Amino acid sequence: MINQPEVVATIAALHDEYEAALVSNDVKKLTGFFWNSEFALRFGVNESLYGAKEIEEFRKNRPAVDLQRQVLRQQIVTFGNDTAVATLEFVRRIQGSPRRGRQTQVWRKFEGDAGWKIVSAHVSLVPVSYMDQASALIGLPIPEEYREGVRVNLERVAAIARPLLDFPIDDSVESAKVFLP
Image 1: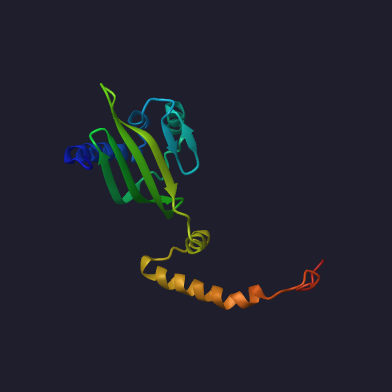
Image 2: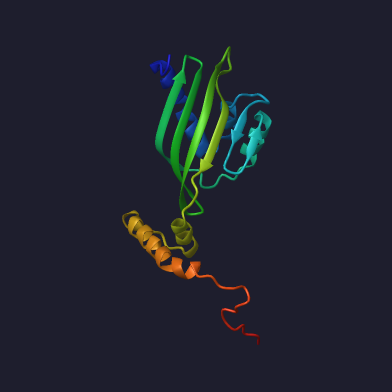
């Protein structure tokens, strides 16, 4: 049965605990959520971790900086009473700039004391637009109410520059004299 209410509620509660442990960098709790197996898997933004030991080492050595994040959307889908997939979209500030990200966790219920564990997880950041990269480089944040206008103006600048950029210039042509002191 898909999305049995009691199973969804269990995973939602576990996921809330995971989120609290994540933003507080509670390494012991975070590693405890994962299946203690060489087959546990976590693909992060910059790392591919195979097995519970690699996941634990990553958690122990990860800088506890900019961990707060705002969850934008969360979805839980359960299959029977022993398998679930939890996904969410989030925003977090990295070096002062907001970054959108996505997370997927596959949960499995094991017999005995083990209970529910994450067997596979994936975290990724959405690529940053040119507008956001330029804004961050010059230290000029773009307020939300102006973002669409800035985007449209960047498209206009690109359209205006396109004929110049597309103009063929032979490699032997020097575009400007080179100053040599």
